[in-house]
Length: 201
Ligand code: ITT
Image 1 (tube, rainbow, N blue to C red):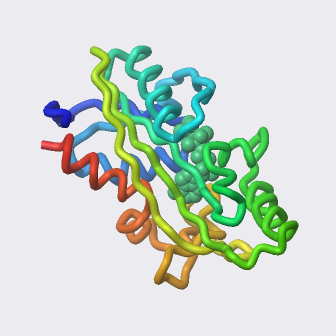
Image 2 (image 1 turned 90 degrees about the vertical axis):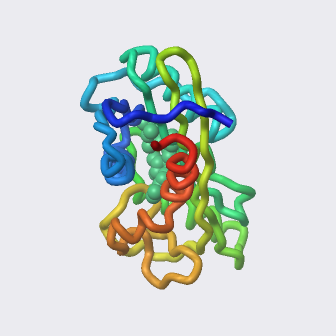
């Protein structure tokens, strides 16, 4: 178990996804961390060559810690659909094409479910949060949230696949939900709770 703590002060969020930046700031800033994103710092976006959320999270945080000389936080996450064998999974962002269009990505998920006549619409969001210090020490925490996919998508809050995801026991999609409520139950919040217990003073 890692003994080191994340001290109040600068933390680089190694992400180019504006939706994640917003959520990571909401989660980490109350703990006294001053979060600056890879977008604000103009950092390069490394190619995600690993086959797991954890592997890709570490790769992104390592690149940012090396580039800045500051502790770096990254988030690798995605939607895992049961009837699609876990797809889009680590390819969740790539299903949106270039430039990213999550309306299209959601249509692809819906079309893939239609193609196989899937009755099982269960899915989960998965998140790996990695912290890497400039001296090379590193740690990762994983979280998830289970739910069901609805069609058509609903709501314009959140980001990515949020408008088609309803968490178990809820009736609104993450796209319709108040961000503070999403932070109480999301895959990112689940990983953050584990990180907070281990790394925040
Ligand atoms: P970075 O690598 O720069 O962080 P990215 O968008 O490429 O940004 P990922 O490779 O981790 O990030 O892709 C994760 C995708 O999964 C992301 O683009 C979203 O579409 C989706 N996703 C992750 N968390 C989500 C959430 O809370 N709500 C909706 N969609 C989410």
